[in-house]
Image (cartoon, rainbow, N blue to C red; front, side):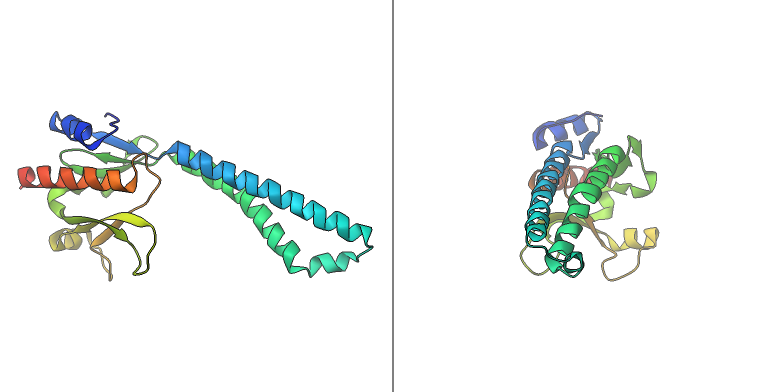
Length: 192
């Protein structure tokens, strides 16, 4: 397996029979963690200022319990200083990746490929780059399965054909879209 910085190099590696691993971006996770810790530090300072100024004015402790600002700060502190580091640690430990080869694409966790997630190129009808909701927002890479593939997999529901790839990979959503559309155009014809 190889790591390629661009679409052309990735396609060249796949032409030689190798697979390309698009891993989770640890840099993005570290940036998120730093922002959460900085926000948590600001909230600690803000809470300290509110408490010290209230104590100087001899305010009852009961007012802290009913003060919506203190509740908002407490929830923010829990989110920034407790939940965010746990989530980042779990995401780094899981080491999710998307393995793209000339046969198709598959997900992997901690370096182990998940065979049930394998999708052959001829099972994909089209690949798009669009928002998930009708409103403007972040764009995601979405691929649509063929009707036969949906029936074989036993998927049901309104969006059974649609599979959305999450963000946070080493490739941006545009690079990932370019890689997947180029690989689909090249290898879907060869598999059929």
